[in-house]
Image (tube, rainbow, N blue to C red; front, side):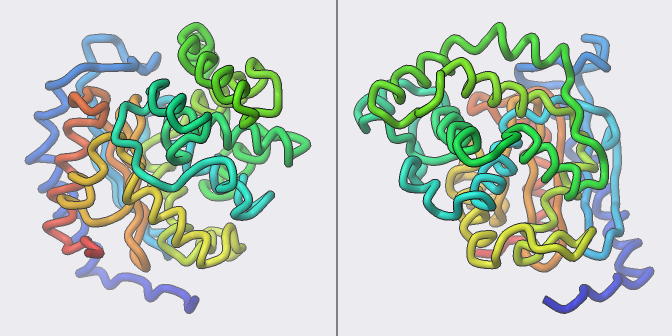
Length: 315
């Protein structure tokens, strides 16, 4: 892919103005909805935080609000776990996990039993556990495979938040149940506790709104990391990850996200919604209060408005 053309000063000013407008019109939603996870850096009275970031392919970054406040990556890490698995084994990973929207909650046991231990897609919890099992099969250092990928994409060390990790371990009963169910069908090869431990460690990596926007850029750049020029995935595989994000990346609201935004996204219960726009940039919105589907209320609204103002829909 040719090097992206640097934006003109007018284009940069326009992006800054649009981000400021979007933040002004949507940040009030940061005070509405349920907070699933309280970042340890914030007092409980300050959970109404809001960050928004765009990272262009040439390295130019535009941020507003709390874009440099750290939080646990949670389910957004599933994109990078899948990418690492694809690097190691290719599309063989899809012999054990599907590529269809689930239509059920991300932690449903019922669908998993009906479908004989094969998760619908890699972005629900059961699918992420299978991806972690693949990483345990294929990598000498499974955690390092994903953490190293994130470090290469962001230029910053991927560190685990110990408080978040302890909370994830304590709250993993349902993940263990899914792991044991899949193991009974032969679709988990390693001890379930090892698989769940890898998963919760990955979910506990600290990120920011800015670094997630930066990390998403390779998916907007035909699988090439713009920071280093190295291929992360082949162009066809990057396109497949984007397709899964578009159809499966935002829990039971993926159809509505596709309708409203029109570009691939992955959300997490810490309040991040990360996406990418082909040939243009990575993007992330973060606000902890969630809607009934488990997605950030303010983040969803901000990306919807951003898509409209910048004509980002690919559909």
